[in-house]
Image (cartoon, rainbow, N blue to C red):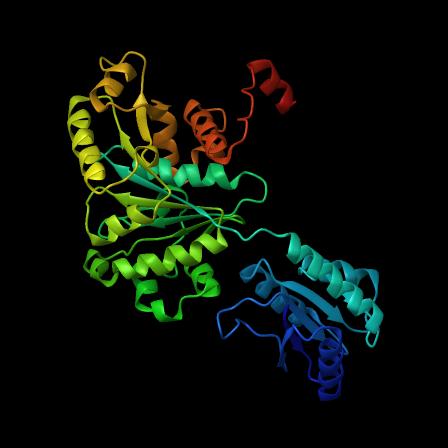
Length: 383
């Protein structure tokens, strides 16, 4: 294991180091005098062991912040404090176990439990889903942002949305009213420092499991983002998230093509009108020219109504390809969501668009979508 020991007591540092060396020569042990804000080498250790005579609220807050930045980090505390109030506060701060000082047997047992858990864990390899507009105004940004929210609603799923519409991206506004601390272009300027903590700090947190990396406010900064930056960003993101959604926009340039190359699935978003049919065919031809597999491309028909003169069967005949998912037209619900910057699934969970997004999320996650509730069930739920 990769273990960091934090203690101001030099004698305790030596004792704990000796104990860990005797337990396993395979462990990598680092020593610190105080709780770090970030890990300098960019690698998250498996365990942080804090040994201290007295641990106050300041230390617990720092542990909680560190655990939030590094969800896979296990934290063990050794201190004499064992009151129920302290144990509860420690648990809320993300501390795995609170042990008595010098209780070597208890510490070794805790280390074995952490090792067993690590051995059972499967390395996360997030799935990259790219959304691209067949024509301006298709609703691709709305779908990407809101599908991210729907996917993150699943148990123990971490989801990220990257706004790759470099000049006019506004994906964050669809699900949040917060101003981003860092944008994609600013992150690209620090690409040599990119690690999990920097990526997390650069994103807007929509929910505990859903975050958005915003595009630059100024179109002039689009040139700051290079194709190689996308490679590094997605490689890191795959190890940190279960799903990474990309709002690619409509233009095809080296950055967007690199993102599409790296995507597991591409979702061209169209509508049932002739201009979309024409531009959609052109886009599919480009994708075929780039050598993308047919099963990598999944057509999304947005704002569909049964009264549309162009039917789903007509579109499938024109494209020679199956429409993967149809999203119903519900202008009022979508407009309210966009105007307020609130995910439609949160604002109107029973809206037909919300239902379609839940079904799409369940399909991608290999789950059964939640059953639709009738009006009687909804009435009883409010009672």
